[in-house]
Image (cartoon, rainbow, N blue to C red):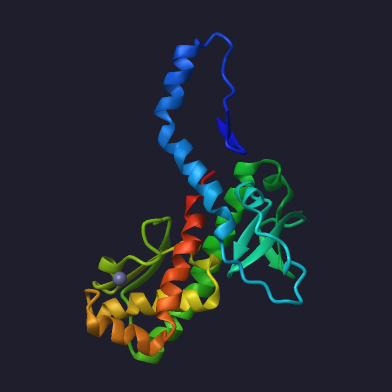
Length: 227
Ligand SMILES: [Zn+2]
């Protein structure tokens, strides 16, 4: 079952009755609506490209992202190509994934997901640790999972456990900083009160802009990277 330019295409066994087919479609109505929302919101991803970059005048191509032929890394639209490598790596704005992973959509997405998880657990963990040293706060644990509901889990953060969605690796630097600051702020102020936001503002003065820009990146959470 897939949605192609707002046309639902279903491949089914020819013995299946039309009634049964309709039932199956109705059982998947949430998924269909979610796909519609994804394609409608696709054009809104605020991908930032420098003027001298080859991507600068290219529209974000949501279909390519959904099919794992492009992805977003650190706020930039990144081409995904097959490479002669055993695990995914990025070079000159291109993400190379092993040739055998490039064969089909789901294995491409799986490879991209494993790359994003690696970037999160290395680079973003380091950014968080650096911020912790700066403000003399030490979390009990920094973890990256497939959370979706949050970029950082506020209630866990108030117990000094920083749990991020691994897709944080897809955010540009200023938004990653805001999410990290937000997490650390909860280690001092558990709820979103005035003191909490004063603390956030001190280390992320553009937090209002970041907070609304983050919403536009939520669309990236609709992608599943499971094998
Ligand atoms: Zn919060």
